[in-house]
Length: 411
Ligand code: ZN
Image (cartoon, rainbow, N blue to C red; front, side, top):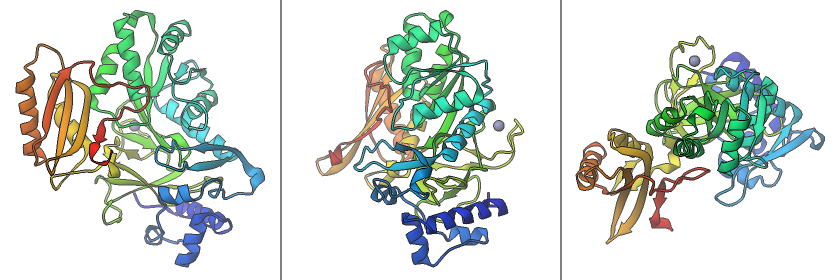
């Protein structure tokens, strides 16, 4: 999916704004002696932007408009050091709501729906994005925010919520609570809009089975507006993304060269119309691919496949590069296992060791299944992990992102 003429002219207008500001990217452009791009090749020669650039700009160095045009800031979670602060103009906030409303529409959600929003509000972009999109659409937002499952379930029944917005972990937790309390007949949920983390087919199936709802994956990141820049349609053939607002490239994370459509690589995003903090060729470190061809729904918007992992999730075990998604793929082939798992990497007796914790019910042969999993990892990936089988419910579930990979070598 090469960049087109209109997108190039939008990029040039962003480059002008960046050159006129104190923004780090303006500096990169000046150093590279670039002020405009005229072709896909020239665009692909533009420098990348990295999360570290954004951190260094703390607190407000990413602002590319005069002070009076900024109406809001958001911040990334900042789990590793300095947070990233993204300034938004009035137009940025509106554009984000338009994109989010488009996500809801793509999921078949209308102004007759009641949307229960469980992601967090505040500096974080999640809750407010789901909210603004719902209001733009004209649906009734039920702005719960995270946690307090008791109240969530009460409101879900009393307000007759038809749409649940949540992380996949929290959607699973809600689903399991609904099942435990036998509330299936008392709720009116029809759809789930799930954001912000990679999740497996098993977890999806479990939520779908219990709640009997359609599930939609929403994509986005704080640096690029927030959630809402893409969502799958009912055909579940990848997430449509809004190429009138963002341009997506997939690059090889090692050579940094764009890969052909259909090939797996790192998602790199350029914002085409963002004013407050435009980003050019921002490396997300999310791994996915562009799905070639047309979607049966007839949408003209291109598609991105589900996120399979992060370039920095790559683990090196006994000289072999492994992604958590590969382990998950193997676990998925064992129907006896639940959707939960945990990977622990440690350094024992001078060797890197991977332990995989999985859950199953009590009537399964724990030792037999552990052996079968270890054998399959050995044959598919090339090293033998230690597999520990535990009872269903033992592994942690969380209201936020469930941490599935724990690297004890660096703790
Ligand atoms: Zn579609």
